Length: 342
Image (cartoon, rainbow, N blue to C red; front, side, top):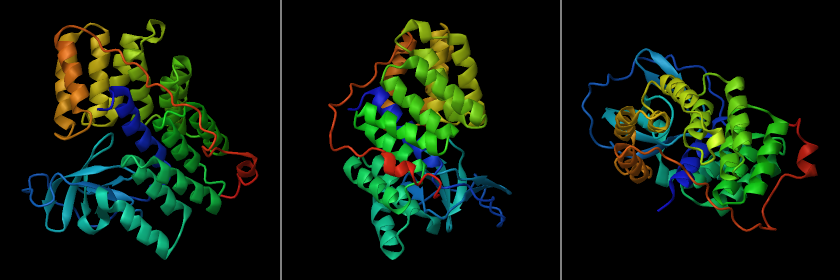
């Protein structure tokens, strides 16, 4: 069973790394999708990903821009339309069933697309899917293909950093995130590096990165939630700040319409940090409502619920680093020469 921190960093950093890879297009102007009262059937509960060309979901008369890779659960089915709910941060919406592929079929689907027309974008997409499937070695190979095709593709260094982080190769991950920021500084990669620095016990650096992520994009919840998480649960007391953690977690919940299990979980931790265990229990239970029944985080969330019910706050411990690897791919001088090619 994975530890809480490893699982949280896995979920959040995967989402973060991929967000920049597929810029959101204009919201769809097609007809209104089914209402939320339509009866569900068929594929409900299936884990799916959007196909690379999909740029928006539908919610009533509005489009919800898709910022990047995300794993969704099918919540409802109406004819050829599916209501999708993100497993992590984000909003729910409707999409045509031909616009999604089952997660366990996504690698084969993308491989066929790559064989038909290879591109850095498709290799990057397949790398993110492979991270979700814990296939780190093949994900690194996909990253190498992206660099071969487009050395200036900045986001791939962030994706590579996520992989190396998951493998416990923290120094190499830090270098990779740094290269991504050098090529194209942005909120998402700063948040990625913030989660890595938590694992490296560089809590000040983590807070600084989350703060920079917030400065660069105040409408993105992950920086707010990440900083609140550190301020609520850091094992080093000098970095904890319960009241500010509560404020940040509430802001993240507002951005996600109070429907993100991750953000609600952070709010529960923050309210526990200020000694409001009644609120902590309330928010942890709410977070569990949005975590799938077979979700990988339920066990840890239920343990935190029991902790809060006993009147105790939560503290995390970073995952140990792996032994250094001389074979790990990392950015070098050759990538810097082509920084302007993208």
